[in-house]
Amino acid sequence: MAASSVFRPGLFNHKVAIVTGGGTGIGKAISEELLELGCNVVISSRKVERLEAAAEEMRQKIPASSPARVTPLQCNIRNEDEVKDLVSSVLKRYGRIDFLVNNGGGQFSSPAEHMSSKGWKAVIDTNLTGTFHCCQQVYAAWMKQHGGVIVNIIADMWKGFPGMAHTGAARAAVDNLTKSLAIEWAASGVRVNSVAPGTIFSKTAMENYKDLGPSLFKMSISSAVCFLLSPGASYISGDTLRVDAGQSLYHSMWEIPNHSAWPEAPEGENQEALKELLNPKSKL
Ligand SMILES: CCC/C=C/C(=O)SCCNC(=O)CCNC(=O)[C@H](O)C(C)(C)COP(=O)([O-])OP(=O)([O-])OC[C@H]1O[C@@H](n2cnc3c(N)ncnc32)[C@H](O)[C@@H]1OP(=O)([O-])[O-]
Ligand SMILES: NC(=O)C1=CN([C@@H]2O[C@H](COP(=O)(O)OP(=O)(O)OC[C@H]3O[C@@H](n4cnc5c(N)ncnc54)[C@H](OP(=O)(O)O)[C@@H]3O)[C@@H](O)[C@H]2O)C=CC1
Image (cartoon, rainbow, N blue to C red):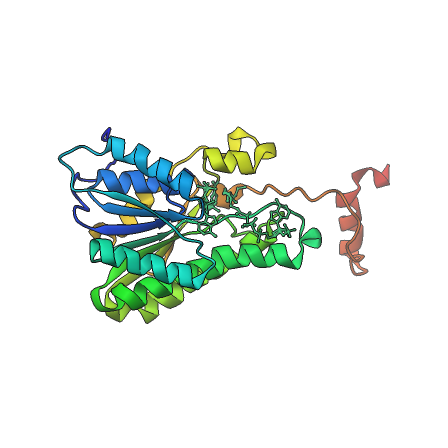
């Protein structure tokens, strides 16, 4: 495996991580960096063939001297029983779960007025309930007794998420869940944080958002996740790290067209000033 991580080799030797959605895109990058650092990684999602192919590709890059192993396990995070099975299979195979990275998720773009109830629920179930299932099962079966670290991947939804209102609502809820769990589980030695990526390149994301074009996806977040999992972040919990090159401070993908759907300004000297501002030619 080409050494690309900025972290010390062997940092995560003999640790065990579950990365949901670990076979594609951001999850794959996170899994590869964890493996490079000596961690055993269980990559998990719905499409088993794609997972197995990704695991095989990752195995080819692990040097023989590394203790790291990768295991693909199928699981739909929307289904609580499947999540329970995932956690018990990991414990059977590796005997511990140090890290959980809730990266599995997604949505489709649609104006809110056209979202069906089924589509809304699918996105909430995947991104919010799926994340909750994974946190709860890993905590109950392992981290409550032994501690651990959880990182949730959310999104740049700080100014709302027009065009994907369902995912904005779900990710904002995960941001809040992160804080609640960080406090409830602090006494067990469990840290819970989130990472909010800006737009990040991935082949699968490109396939999903063809029309939005390649320029949207260009950054990487795996080292931010590895940092939050590491002892270097041992005093960081209940927080969300934005990894977006400042995008959330300035960028909005949503253009509001010119319109006059606002109430008239109240009468008075400001009304004239406002009219002039909105229509500077009106005085000519
Ligand atoms: C831009 C930068 C920011 C973000 C980047 C990324 O996240 S990159 C990562 C991006 N990667 C991903 O997002 C990948 C993962 N994404 C997914 O798996 C899906 O987007 C999912 C979460 C909706 C699950 O969907 P599923 O198919 O497993 O669920 P299901 O079979 O239960 O269907 C439920 C209902 O949802 C509706 N509906 C679904 N799709 C559409 C659509 N295109 N159009 C309209 N509606 C749609 C439809 O109502 C459907 O019911 P119907 O009408 O069929 O009876
Ligand atoms: N790329 C970007 O710009 C941004 C991405 N994000 C978020 O980051 C995460 C990774 O995105 P990215 O790598 O770009 O895109 P991908 O589409 O590659 O990643 C989504 C992953 O989630 C898995 N997944 C989806 N639904 C489920 C489910 N029900 N159960 C288990 N696994 C599931 C998919 O695997 P499978 O289909 O096999 O289940 C896939 O591996 C997602 O949560 C995404 O929404 C957030 C902001 C920006």
